Image (cartoon, rainbow, N blue to C red; front, top):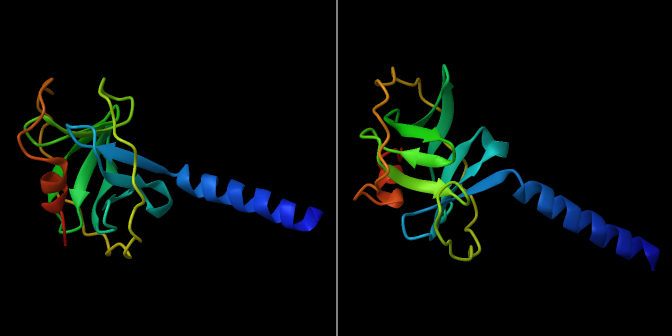
Length: 144
């Protein structure tokens, strides 16, 4: 009887440790739309499992690049920002907003080979505004 119980505890611990390596990204309405998988070199997946972008350090900046090679924006203090400096998404707790309950994610596809990244533009002054572009639209511009 003790062996199945130990297996169950181990399974639960393993499931939570895998999940702990992911950060959910919410849109301006507080809906979960994407997530960063740190077990996959900080690749960004849409909720449907599509790999669309990744994070990469550029000096002191954390930049967002699409798998198509395009520079998309910055990830700073838990907020994704576009080239204009407007917020397009955020992790829970980074911005004062109510977030929806996370539904089950689709199975991840294999992330593409990362391209050579371009020179990043000069960072704008970040605004306190949300972009009119949705988080999903923003990330889809990086789709390979």
